[in-house]
Length: 351
Image (cartoon, rainbow, N blue to C red; front, side, top):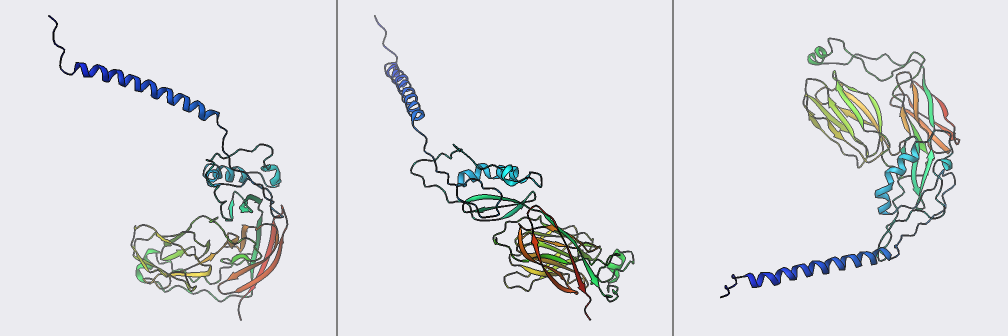
């Protein structure tokens, strides 16, 4: 006499057979679908080579959003490292023949090219013109700013007893005219006043660092680019207060207490302004002056009045030297391709 089948066994066997059949069918569909996909032609985004403005050293390929994501850092770094004096066209030759193609579905519209934002990388000006990446080697402007006349005697700062003790009774003086042994004048802002053709500048200078040290701001005079960060640190073991007082509309005023060993304070301004004043309301003799320039072609003279700053692309420009007390001097300069430029300025002590 045959035994009765166990409950569920008759159902389990058909289910197992069905599962195997579905697995085989899925594998076949996947294989033939993959083979069909491999046989299809690739859909590509057209690469357009537009003419480059006169004076541009190299033209790169038009960048889509995908190309910018995958290739932009490599283009910037490899194109910016060639040695000075090497022609830009020899550094990055324009593409010929079949160029690399960005793959996109046929129903996807190509992305718009990146905006014409210019920046300095590894001594080269990098920007886009007519959808092309342009790279121009930059040179250097060096020089000296001298002071003519005898400046007034600097006066001791009216420090309180606490700050006087911090400085071990060594009371500093005002810093209106800091003149080196060769007659060079420190703390002069030198910058390109006019003549730049590009107006949209990416951040090309590092963040500016200012220290409240021994009850003084260091440096006393500095410069940065619009939009760049300015960090202020309290290096003393006493309370300070950071109070920038801009005068240009759109630049915000701040007033922040700064405790000892507290985090650095961050500031930034979007509008150009010369000699934006920082002060400390706790110590009324503490001042610093930061010029905010809309482009990266500027510099501040050192203790001997010496200047070093990046030169703009070849062309004709006006360059200005500005001192808080000695006034302004403006010259016309011509930057020639592949050549540095030396400048000299003389400022006069006001009567």
